[in-house]
Image (cartoon, rainbow, N blue to C red; front, side, top):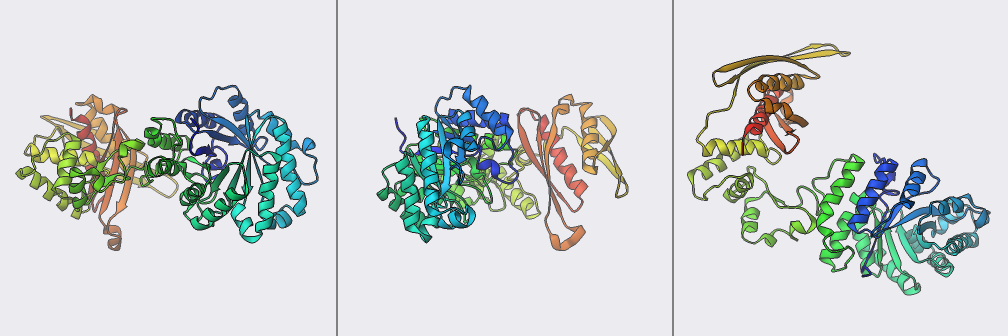
Length: 520
């Protein structure tokens, strides 16, 4: 079935122009394959001839069978004063062997006369010649009207003439581009509606996020009649980025009833977002709409109490629809319902009116007032709950003593830690060196515990964060340390707080090791 809205992904071209984004040819193929499996209709692979990676991508893409997507190559209209059949750009675009070609051309008269230094009629000829040439070679041609909205605002008659020249030459779709990202949704809607009334071919929209309206402008254009939306996964792109398809897609499907994906694909949206972030080596945005870790996280006691009874009272969709899930956070703002739900999530059964439930709630509030934070330290919270429920069970181990020494100057330094650990009646005394004092302390603690608990050799630290809690206290301020650990199968967070950063780190390290040893 034909989709109500066609999805055109330009992560591999426009997205790759974003600061800090760099894809190899292999990266681009992996992303394209994932986009194809997800159900994206058109995947823009790059600009043939601009760099060796893009040409390698097109060579590899031509050998593959694509299930849902067509691969598009991107280029510009023929150069001024060069016959289209002699233009090197045309040769390269044909060598890419893609079924779809996207050509960008000038709409704004300012760009025609001042940037391109061409006559207005010559620009129209460049648009028409290029599209006709590519259509004669059997290509589906998408025409990207650069600066469409700026051009129409200043010189509406000329802007319209450029779009009509593209349509007359045989363009299969004309895409209106808010290239500078400076237009408001109402402006986008008005110009899109005008274009739809004047043109017979399908209209697309390509927006940038310079004012934070990339998604809103795309939605406004679709409301006004556009049937193709161009964007990137996670909003990658030059300057502040492009329209974020991860936000557009569920808005179309769930809010507007406009089908754009195969059945069951939408539930893989979060997975797709995180996959592309991983390939790009970009940290996941925890606050990303729809797919972020906090998108369906509830902290206020009143909110948590309400969603326990009626989930949609504080959630605009079912999180599972986009592959996300509900999270209940525990903090000094928590009510008893937060604790009950969080404990259940961690595997504990609490009775609402039990004295232990009240004690856990009070203890969490007390510790958070002192600087602890359990939102990202669920392992420390689990140990706290376990300790109260089991009425202070015997510890698997205790740290009797530790010492950390640091020596050096600005050019070099050495760090050493000594730890004495008691496991039952046995005492293990170990020394380790490290890249820093905490690394040395971690090494010594792990080495000492591994004598009794060899499974801890598999545990490694994946993240270490330090937060100064009271800046006005200067170097005497309290420090909060958050540590993320893994054993290769699961990941967990722990927390420590102290005026001494080494002591805070040790607290978090001890919790991490203790949690790793729990059987359930």
